[in-house]
Image 1 (cartoon, rainbow, N blue to C red):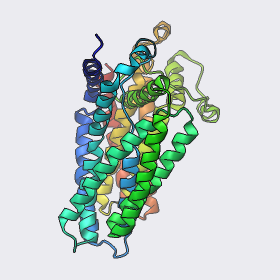
Image 2: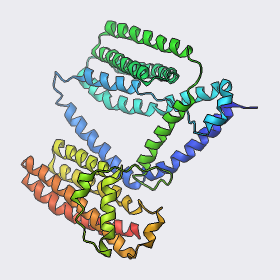
Image 3: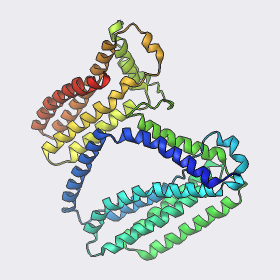
Image 4: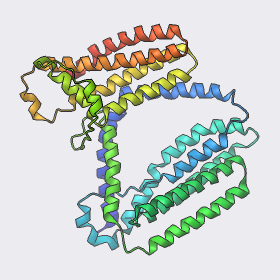
Length: 403
């Protein structure tokens, strides 16, 4: 006898085991230290910024937009796999408890974002509206939870619709209404908030009505959605450790490849070329490298203290080196590389050289940013300290890890 509830428990246990295995690598000691530093520094400067908050700061627009987008993004995790298209489709009429468990799990797993953003916007709300009691903001967060549940159910009902255009229009309308509701709530316009909530309720009931008219569950769509979400998770985990069953995406990027094509034709430069090509054409490394430069540049530009700017510059240099060192293991499942007549020491040397070149480029970019801000001491400090740090970290920690 098929028991959908027990089946979900088994599928859920396997899912938790799979994700926790990679989460251990993502939140390792290095990343935990970096995150602790980021949160501490941001909290300090956030508190400093709130003391000089402009009177006309658009708090209602910002919080309303963020909360509206937060409740609108409510994906349903079904944990379905491709074989289920064959083996479970005959038990569709018994899958009710399974999908109810999946919706409840989806709601619970997304609560952390509400708690995180709620805690982050609390001081801003209090600084903008000091005459309001804290209970008002807590009631707002309660409304966020209610709308989160409603949007989650609406998304589930729309997953029974085959046409993607209908789903996209429905999501757009609900998103605009969600943003309007929370904007009016934060602004204190409760009448307008009630009117937009009524409009949202009409869309909500329309979604329920249209879903009831569908013949059944779109199994292929549910499997595709869950597969895409797991693929995104695997791509994130692949930045920290090797994920064997991840299908790596390869980009052509001919114009970038042509810039680094000038490598001498000799055995000792074999892996120079391979690692450069991998860095540029792989779907992960190049984008991550530029994202770290961009985010690091934002911290350097907006943090007021010059020495904190320098610490953030070193922190992002460290993160770039730490993330890029996974390039060394990118091709380890390809046995043909072991046939190359190239010593292992040469391969490691090529990796060290590329890492040092990338971090030096990043150091120069940060130095130019200091120069643009007129911080001449910062330019000299980031160049000297950054290059020394890159050399010591790469030739110390990275070399040791490769061996």
